[in-house]
Length: 594
Image (cartoon, rainbow, N blue to C red):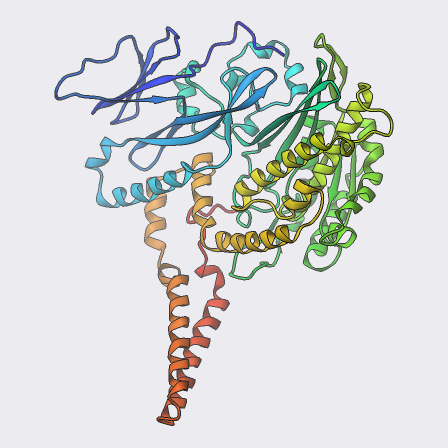
């Protein structure tokens, strides 16, 4: 499990020299490697031995950086993305893990000065999306260990541990996989830093005289990444939205145990396009492809995780029920001893407060969990157990209901492991140790909040149950606020955020000819539609309606005026409702389903 001495070392601290014509990145962590020079005109890269000469006309700005995330080419210029601030948040298998607390985009766009005006406008629009990407939540990295893989997969890597981190990493979980390509092409291994989007939380607690260390990691897949209502379901290759791998690692008395769960959107071809309604309707598309998509999805899961039990937590009735019925029907064609499907109507069984009823769900999956085990190493680093299968959980968003359910499974697995090691007796549970219990709840609540913030823009709903073990009045109020914030973000902010994600992930490749055409085609209602303007007109109409009504006694004609203003307000409101999709903040870089 230790890092090989033959693996190339990544630079952990660097000095950035900003010259008028180039950037120079110099290792400052004691390494003796070459400096990296990057042209600010064409973004060409080469290694140099010395820092260029400074002069009164060539005075560089100097700042400290902690990693290069990648390089992205736009219409006329390229942009270097670097880590300017980091925070150590814990360790993974004995190696420090860092959280990105600040990214900086450095333009290499001097060639833009000679570009046509139209290209300059497009460049400015794309550059604004990079400013959105700078604020990406939940980015983590390590200079020493591959955090894209679970402890079990790392143990099984073998000779691959001698490769540079970016080569041994799982490309599904490298957030900067696309924007690293320019550095990979230039063979800059010591500068190639894989970054994971997700979550990293841990704590220590005492069980008698024993100290237990528990870590919970989330790894977000980059294949169909995006925002809550702009990325739903699966694509034609079987990759699903909001696919996250969660690994719970326990260390005690020299033993290490790891268990992995996964979540991901219902693997059908479906959308839920924002239209100003609180719950936009589900739209199933290209139903003839569903059997192939489902098969691809679960074949991929089988290869990576072994046996699979898919737990579907959505409602049995209504719009969710129709979606679940399609999922259930498609699963019947691939169900086997290796792939199982279980529907559990979370809201019907647990309501909004009786989450203790999740014990009913556990009773139905206990045999699968005990049979498929978990990964376990002894004090000598020898493998005693291997995880043979995975629990896949989904609701509609794969956030709130999913996190409550996964935390229950994680709790049962931890108790299972502690009994196996003799730390717990047969009747002992996490709840019998208040400090361990409290920390474990907070661990999973923070985990759920991190995943939810990245996908929906707000912390998870129902988080009070995960955090405190019961529903609280404050938690219900917080859920109400977060639900309204989701509505606002999903309708009026997430389109731009989706564009930024697609740009950085390489789901949208900038093309001068295509983007010139896009800009010229943006006309008609979509070009002038503005929800704030429409809302302002409605409020103005209502104001004059009330004002006219108050003056009816002075002049009866004011009654007519009030009816006119009310009619205008209602007409604008009806128009906005009928054309809701146009008034929402939609992604500009629209990508059809593949």
